Length: 348
Image (cartoon, rainbow, N blue to C red; front, top):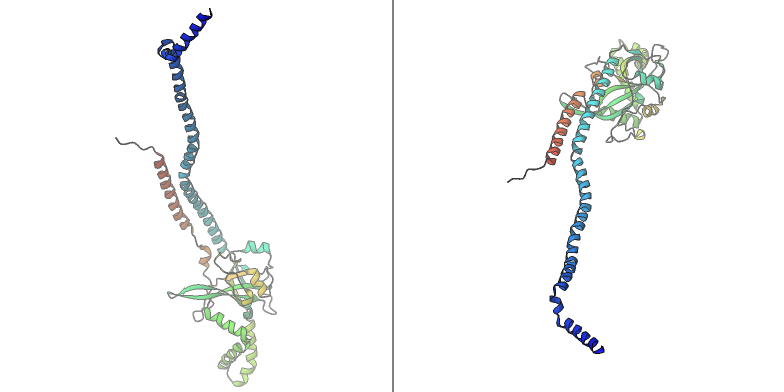
């Protein structure tokens, strides 16, 4: 029995050691199946993993492409909004100019007994007014420089603003002083005023001229001395009738330098600051002289043209031109965006 067992073990060893079992079908089938399964399972799992990674990588790309498509229409939306804004601005400008035109057509108000206040100033703006008084030349303010075309030649000058003060013992003259923009003057006016103010010789420059004019008009030397004082006083206190339009302070652009009252540099009209410099209340009424009765022999100061008040740097027609520019531009860029999104046909 022991011998049979040892013989069986010896045969088994020889069987496995000879490699005969590798060619037996029963052993070949399990080995081939297992090997094929082990070799095919990685290949079968790889497409699913690749598809998942592809989907995850394409998701941000789709979001970016979607936003980029919307951004193509952004220039068209901006230009369309600008065109619409120009239509709104045009309508507002038409209403504003019509409001000014109607107020200028009203009868002039008498400002001789007017009391200034913030409410009255808002209600009186662009109203024509008339008042009497005399100009206090010593407190004149020059605002500028402002250019003006004279006989085809452009010259720099200034607007002269002078307080209009009540005539003594005359109730029909203006009661509270007002500021009057008398119009445009040559640059030499300010230069002469600066020399007079620096030298303190304003009275000496005026008196000899009036004396000479008086002596030329006198009948004799006896009569010249006595009327001289009276005529000189009448020249100073003679009432002047002013017809103007109530205005407010100017709104300077960012390119206009600030005013410097200490050095007498005024680049734009600031009514409260000018009033303080002239020793007047800040709520003093400010008007622009629009009197058309100008002496051809002595046109300066040259009053403003009333038609300039119903003009603007950008007129309604300009807004319409801007609209006709922005809308076609909006249509063009929007059409270009649509054409860029249209799928291209492949050529065969």
